[in-house]
Length: 75
Image (cartoon, rainbow, N blue to C red; front, side):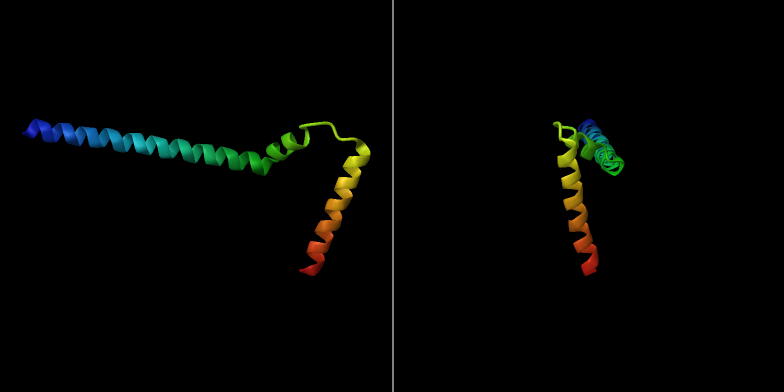
């Protein structure tokens, strides 16, 4: 009887340590993703997915600046 209880306790401990390791791993992945986003790595990769002509880059940048100016002007 006592051995069965000890076995159940050991199984529960193993499960909880596994869950803790899982949570730590997920937290580390989340932190890594956030650090990539802060560094601008992800947006840089998206921008370099294909070649964009210099004139098109300028147009996109100009349109983006206009949009931001309108947003900031209303505030």
